[in-house]
Amino acid sequence: MTAIADAECAVEDTLRRAQHGDHDAFAAIISDYQGVVFGIAYNFFPHRALAEEIAQEVFLQLYRNIAAIHSPPHLLYWLRQVTSRKCIDEMRRSGPRRVNLDDLEIAVTPRLIDPLIARRLRELIAALPDMQRLILTLRYQEELGPADISRIVGMPENTVKSYLHRALTALRKEFGGDRGH
Amino acid sequence: MDIESELSHLLRRTEPPPGFAERVLTRIDVEHRRPRRRGPARALAAAALIAIALGGWGLHVTLRARDEVMTAMRIASQKVAHAQREVRGVSR
Image (cartoon, rainbow over the protein chains, first blue to last red):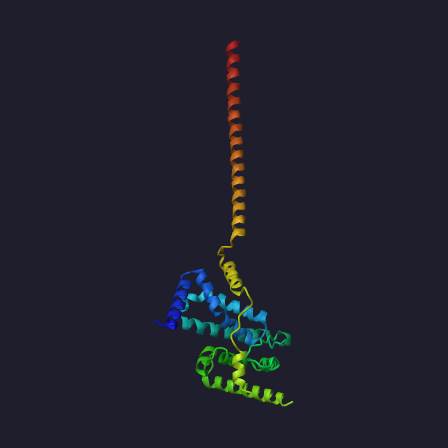
């Protein structure tokens, strides 16, 4: 068997054990997928405490509904969808949130030449309308196409494409105009 | 600048603060009232509770024994009193 197939079997086994009440197996699922869930929440808000709160709620909901998960791909889809919906629900519940620029933690990676550019890009993303920001996150964090994103957010595919196009246009315009100064 | 490339690097998966899984599992245990293994501290607390319970049971046994002794003494004194009345009746 290939390494990928072995890995898929391992995840499937972990999922089955978690569904049968194995606490350690559920802990392994949290560890394996916390980057996905916290990442979506953090890239959407970006506020670490709020992102963690949402991420915790997602896994609590998973614990209550894990019997309904029928495969590892379904698990990933479920986590992305529930996290996305909780982000939108929180935004609707709390209203527009003023982004504290001090919360914009920009990790300097070898790829990023200028952390100031990264910070400015973060500010612009935070200023986008909610659905554009969410769709942008799903597109670039999870590398999903419009069809997959439309299923997750419950929106027609053409609407997703339109939001994505608007978001990129706004970023290119603002960022390109900014760098002209 | 390739903005899509920058977005791919900026909007990447992010790990939560350390201990995240533990915090989730603690909430699950609280909500579902499931005891968790917590190591030596928990074992010591459990041992202390058992010791207190046993001590309490020992006290209960002691008190019960005392009550039974008192009852036995009361019965014995009643019998002694009865015997004394009988003896006085015979000696008259």
